[in-house]
Amino acid sequence: MKFRHFALAATLSLTALAGSAQAQQSVTMWDFFSGGDGARMKALVQAFNDSHPDIQVKATTLEWGVPFYTKVRTSVAVGRGPDLMSYHLSRLPLGLSEGVLSPITDTDLENAGVTKDDFFTTALKAAEAPDGTLYAVPFDIHSIVLYYNKTFLEGSRFLDADGKLTGIDSLADFEEAMQLAKDKGAEVPLTYATADDGGVYRVFYTLLAQEGGTLIDDQGNVLPGDSAQKAAEAIRIMTDWHDKGFQPEQALYEASVALFTAGKSAFQLNGVWEVPTMKDFEAQGKLGFEWGAVEVPKLMQTRTTWADSHAFAIPAQPEGKPMDPEKRKAVMTVIGWLETHAIDWAAAGHIPAYKPVAESTDYAKMEPNATYAPLADHATYDPRSTIAGVASPAYDAALNIISPAIHGYLSPEDAVTQMTQELQGRLQ
Image 1 (tube, helix red, strand yellow):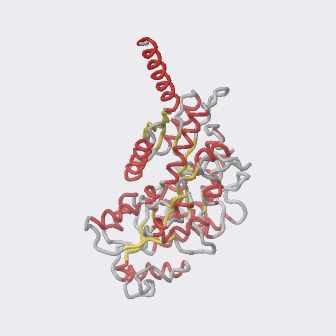
Image 2 (cartoon, rainbow, N blue to C red):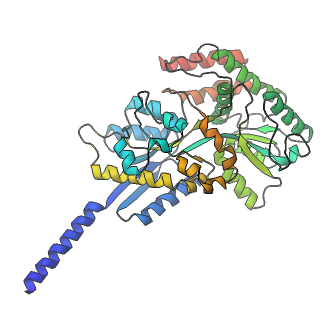
Image 3 (cartoon, rainbow, N blue to C red):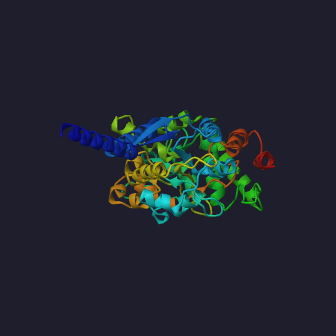
């Protein structure tokens, strides 16, 4: 009897261990989030792990930009990639050309507990290949917005009765507001990173898109049709702001932000990711002014703004060695959980790409996020090109060609010619 009890106990123990081993899934994840984004992602991963003893995420943060995507490409080539990774949707065309992404199937989405209809169309389209195959799950929509310092606008037509920015419906309106701020003592009425690839590119691309221009079309033509003239006009506008003293001279990113937080600028064109900076400074009593942030106004003919998305993707698997179905299901469970808990990610200023969160009452209370959230419906993503997206030749051209142009070192027309030749050469 003792032997039978021992055998039964041993069998039950082994069964329990086998079941535990089968249920326990370890998901390796690579991301590129640092600063406030990094802290929030770490907190989300920890919360997931705490609530899912059967799935444990082991996250590693790598260097943002080219180093991250180079490591992804190399790891996939040797079959040593992570199970899950963050990804910029602007880099999707290059990722597809390199074969580093695994398609996200309807079954995958079902395992995540989400559907395509749950996401903003703009973000979902950016996550798809030209044939409509989904290769990533959008997590947010991040764009540039217009931050404003109410001090320089008090008593003018540009603040309504509630102290909200109003009355900027054209380029002329915006320049009137900037001149007003300059007359009131603003050191530079508008600040953005005029000596930084991202800062220059995003302002240029927003103006170009608002004119209805195309940087690179689906056939690989750079500034096709009348887009060259529209690009020259965008550069001319930015040059004009420089010549009128409306924007800083050769400002790197950190300096451009400091101009606004120090109360020396009336406006800032920068990403939603600086909302936490503003809130932190405000809470610490470091701001001497009231501020707000709105969608970039319709300065040209079309209401649109440059945007990108952080997304989740699964690296391509070695040929003949697909990911274990249970592991893949676990990966999609992680993605689904992060999407449904994106309200915590939104605290970083981002607009959740998952509409049930973006349209929730909790998000509606989140300011200024809720004020600029409508831009998600008509944002313009980077061209679907292997030379566009973050840390790309298109961004390099902004730093090496457009920035010198807006500082008077070459004409807008010459800048467009150089940029066209540079980018077209990259595509050949």
